[in-house]
Image (cartoon, rainbow, N blue to C red; front, side, top):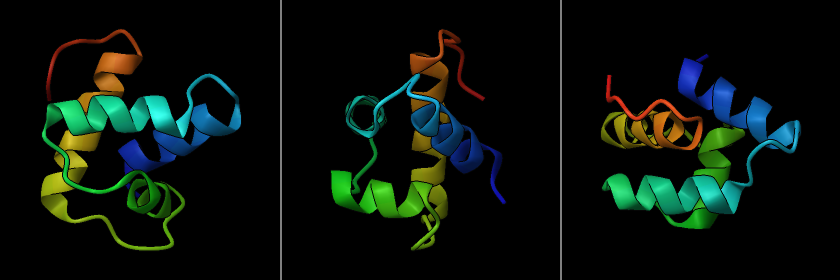
Length: 70
């Protein structure tokens, strides 16, 4: 399991982050998936493309207070 996907899912399930907030940051970082598709990726219903996984990781860093990119 990918660490970024697991982290996103945990934060959403613990109500520390909404999927919508994550999607806005992800989109701002350059991600191309719709809100719906991002939800499918986070819950591993569909596989996230490798390039979008990088944008998701960057977005998670932003919303969790760590602004550095991997």
